[in-house]
Image (cartoon, rainbow, N blue to C red; front, side):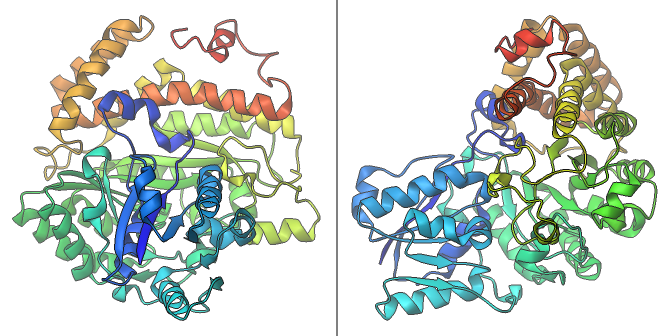
Length: 529
């Protein structure tokens, strides 16, 4: 079998870092770990060609060569995912699809012309698909009633990647989350019992990347890295000497629940192993909203104190926030802004609540007859709710844009980057290592000095003043600080795009009545305003 594996394009999102990628000479944030793991599950005698359309395109010759097209996608990739299915079908190719999007909404892929739906987790369903194909089955939907044992998951085909085009590499240690957040689809997709690989498996994956000469950051893409605390500590205790023996070739970041701050031993092990950052799902500082959405783990201890402890352990904090929870009180956007100011989190990801199909939130809203017809809009981070909220929609939209606009005002953003770096306790394990490899950094630094150190008069003095303080007081954070500054080039464009998207959906700009004169030219595209 000649199989063409394709990963669809992402639209511009909060995490796409478009302008950052451009000035750094990169093309994508992280590689698609799922589809290169699927590649490892396919028969060894198959011929495989792989393309991440965020990095490079299959040629006409590739399309002519293949007999089968395999696609994997998240909901955010909906548009290009469906377009690639339609193209393959028009060319007379068999099409097989999988991943979170078709698993949650399989009817979309079927309508576009997919022949085979390889849903749920591939360790089980890929073999079902292969058996059906060998038996001459022309179509099929393959599902798993149980969760696979990830200790039997194969080594991903990292050699298929154009590694130099990515900001960082990706590995996975666990699947599933023990918590019950109402809006989250992770527990639907992967269950509430976290399943982990053996430490030796993950070390083998890291060794493969090391042998492929990757140097830099690695994103451990677990939705909650600390879901199984016992096994995570087992991994870290084996990872620490592995990293030491190789002179710390990598730095790590991951996603974790806020209760990470309650475990000093775990924080210490992460720092020793080479972790430099963690993404926290904070969602909101409003206790009532956290209780409504069943995110009880965020109510046990003060969130500001948790962030302080994580910084003191040597970790940079990224965080996610959401507006639009049921019974949310007016001013929630401002309260999020105040929390971000207090914790000086550099890159707060703010979104509007979406009901993802088959989540507990979805089921409840369906019973309450509050779901709207267009239920697949959840792929767009700037979409308004796909349900009827408990407070005025225009009020939520206005608070969303006001918060996004203020938090990513260039001076505010650069100040938080600076103050957050100063707040982090230095990790001696990482002082001599760059989380962004030097050969990629040169172009980025030159572009950064030109743009923020010269072209932008509004932040030029601030940029050089803060850079001097970092060099003088915390030189070990220079690379981190410059990377955060460079990411601002993306966020300053992203907030304009978010405003345009919300305005288009509402039919009017919710900030018009309160926007300053300076903001309006920005919406028209004046990036230097």
